[in-house]
Length: 318
Image (cartoon, rainbow, N blue to C red; front, side, top):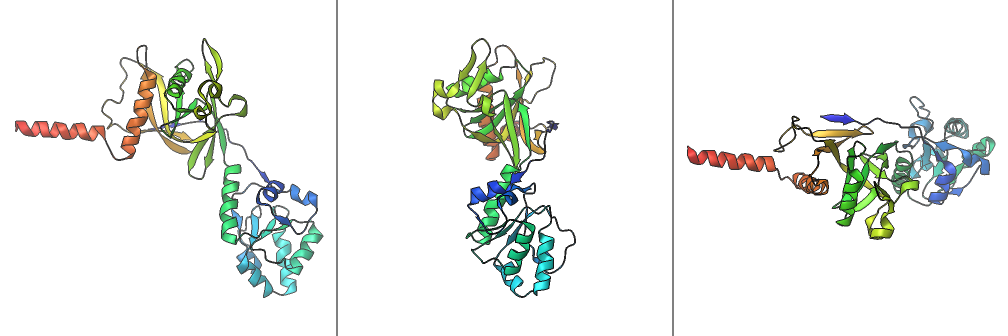
């Protein structure tokens, strides 16, 4: 079973100026205004086909990387071919061209770039290293983002999103967990991002490190429990959904029922539903749920164990 959280995503972009600053790139062509370009694509373009004159299905919004192989191929091209191909690569949507491994900029490329006031940049990093680092950088900066109502904790090192209606005791449970040595990521509102194949959550700047407890007010967790009680972000590995206890409802009693998932930005996250009522210690329940989940991840199944015991017991009577 899956619960699909609403997605309030919006298109993000990364400025070339920020990339130049982060990777300490050398600007070879273009004035300062040429760095006002931006990219919205995490992928990069190594333009082997384009340099050969094949332009079909080219995505013009990708950053162009010219490595050792491309530099060698350019030396074999005629000046007319270079002008034509470089002009195509400097499409109005192309963010920039980065030359790797400290290679020299081809004369025709410099000429065309100056004419178009286009940013050609250089790094002494090898192509594979720049590619890996730049894709990771863009993937995080351009990751889809959503805001969820809930509490995000790191419980025994596991990122746990606690969801439930207002008044279910999510913040009070978080306070008990913090007193037990667990770590707060965010209370009330959680910003979540889809980075690569995982979901990461962090607190909005305005509420970072704060916890709201009804009857007490807002407390500063770091000042009250120390710096180790808060963290910047966590990967969301488990969702615990707190629901009002209903006497006639069916709940997971053995553990072999259909598994539940909550979709966050399209990624299914394992989910445990915990019914809440007066007299139930939600802190102990959440902590136990996390411990049991970690055991299941390691291959242990309580349902399998009780079935095995039942089979042995029945076997003795036969």
